[in-house]
Amino acid sequence: MTFVITHGCCNDSSCVPVCPVQCIRPRPGDPEFTTTEQLYIDPATCIDCGACMEECPVDAIHPEWELPEHLSDYLEINEAYFEGSPVEESRPPDPSRRRLPVGRSKLAVAVVGSGPAGCYAAAELSAGRMKWIDTSWP
Ligand code: SF4
Image 1 (cartoon, rainbow, N blue to C red):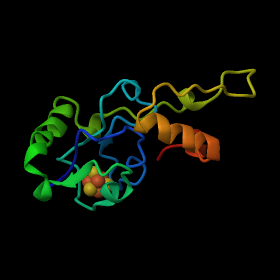
Image 2: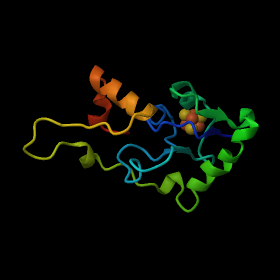
Image 3: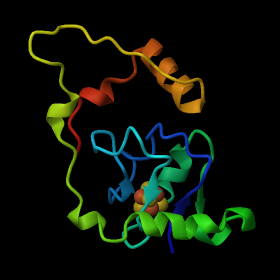
Image 4: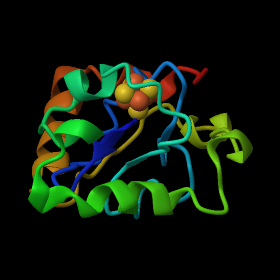
């Protein structure tokens, strides 16, 4: 059994750091993170703890056994994302991608888009709560 991320995913990645087995991809810092349509859970690694579902701000994560019929394709969609690229072989995020370029003391950020992810990013930036970007990943 596994949990499944569905089309409502807003890519804000709040589910990523709470996963005890780090099976949600892509993660901030992964090359495909900025272009992915949604995040995905590796069903072969998920331990069904439910932590990601509790964290999701848009209720896009469901346990496999409670997946609504109209979202049933997402079980296969999540699984397909990891075909040929299992979690164990995934490259960890490159920490250097989260640092300011040498000689710059300020970071200018533009939030592009007005969807949920853009609104959450703008709210977090305004509140100064995006320190996780500068912290090291496990
Ligand atoms: Fe990770 Fe738990 Fe969510 Fe599975 S249910 S993806 S183990 S946080």
